[in-house]
Structure formats: C-alpha cells, structure tokens
Image 1 (tube, helix red, strand yellow):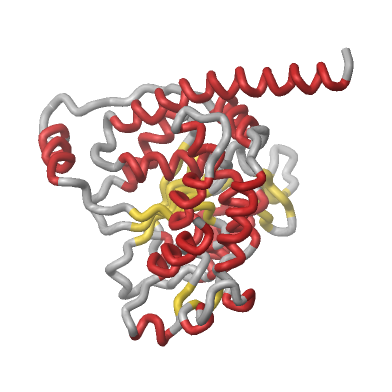
Image 2: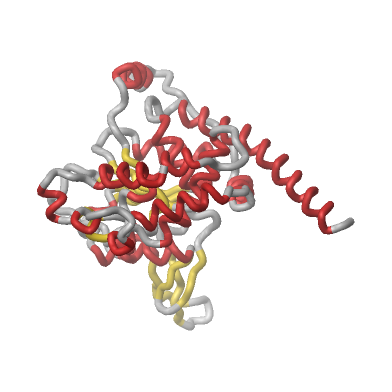
Length: 335
C-alpha cells in the first residue's frame, strides 16, 4: 500500500469514527438533558471540557443543579465519581490520602498508603474556594499531572481523571480566591445562570413528584477515552488556527494588538488558553454534527476559555467594566 493510499484510508477511518461519535454525543447530551432542565449551554460546555480531557470550574449561585450535573455526568459517562465538600478546615490529606503505620503478620512495621477521594475518575470539588490555599494547591499536581506525591512516592490517578469544581460568585466571606496558577488548570469556566421561566416551571414540576427522571449509562470510561483521542485527530483549518492565535495574543496588553488595552487588562491569557481553544472547538463542532471547527466555534467558546485567564485593572473595575466586556471586544477584533 502506498503512502498516499494509507493516508486516505486513515482519513476515511477518522471520518467514520467521527460520524459515530456525533451520534453517541447526541445521545449523551439528550440523556443528561432529561434531568438537568433548562441548562443546555451549561451541559454542552461541561461536556466539551470532559471530551477535551480537561477540568471545568462551574460558577453560579446555590441551587442551580451544579452538583446534580456532576452526579448525572458520572452516571451517563460511566465514570466512578466522588464528591468533596471544601471547607476551611479541610486538609490536603483529606483529598490526596495519607500513609499510616501498621504492623504486618511477621511483626514488622511499615507504612501503607490509604488513597483519598481524589483517586476517582470524576471528582466533584464543591465550593472549592472555601478551602485554604494549602488545600487548594493539593489539587494542582493532580489536575496537571494526573498523579499525586505523598511522602516522596508518586501515585498515579485512575484514567480518565476530571475535576468539576464549583464556586459561589456572590458569597465571598470566609473564602480564599483561587490563585491564577490553579485557575489556568481549568479548561473552561462555565457560568451557570438562572433558567428561563418555562424551564424553571418544568423543573419545579419534575422534581416535586414521586416519578423523578432517572438517567442511564451511554458511555463507559474506555469509550470516553477513545472519543478524547479522536478529538485530537480532527483537522483544524488554518483560518481557525490563526483566529485562535490572534484572539489569545490580543488579550495580552504587552502585545499592543488593541489600543489602550493595558489600561483595562491587568494580565492576559497564556498559552494554555490557545491549547484549550484548539481542543474545545473540535468538540463543539462534533456536537453540532460537523467534522471540523469554524471561526464561529472560536467566538462562541472565547468567554468560557478566557474569562478565568484574564483580570481587569482597578481602574476598569471602578468604571464598571467586567472581563466579559473585554472578551467581547477581543472577539470583534478578530471576527
């Protein structure tokens, strides 16, 4: 078989696999939507994060089904899941695990590692900003390297491994803002808004009867990892690549791409932002039944990818300017 023929066959195999993936993802989204009502955008952005192989930060006031979303995704995707309620007295060992001294049958003493709740496939970190910086930092290595180090020994985490962390945007008393290094580990920040009146009506009726909807498993861990591998094989056109690069670099005041941006932006997105967009736009295209992303996908995901990777200056805050306004300006610049 010639090299050209082999390449054509490989491309045809990717197309065939992508077409099957489109059908599977439609089933996943429909199954989650049976329980999580009126939050179609939130469901899509969270699934985009997981299919991209990343972690999501869910930001919204209490009572918007963030915890239930994580539980539902665990069932539908066939992932082992655990939940940790973050509090000021939570210690790193409460998440990672610890070593205990025990005596064996022969009378010899030794240390045995007891894994913490981070040893799962889908970790729900509820109200992550209520824990101390020391405990928040305990998740950094796990989120980035998929392993934890305890007493000098590395312990690999199960595969796949994803963190869905929640944060309350209005109640800041007794909280510790996440450091920029940890925020950057989240592929997307998913803002969870109030549902529409019709969706809230359906939700109110559906959750106050004795026949509440249940979800079924659509994927398993192995299938999910195959889909994650497929995402990285999908082609991205040069125009989309150029748009991603222009968008991310324009958000950095020192590049001077947008006049007087330095007066509004304290710091801009790093290279992880462009990497996140390259993955996320592919998944969004699959959700829409397409085999390749477009510039519209980049613009649609600019907010979730950039809003936690940028900060406005004190002068901008004094004028009531928020990050989303800056991102909208960046989108107009590259559109």
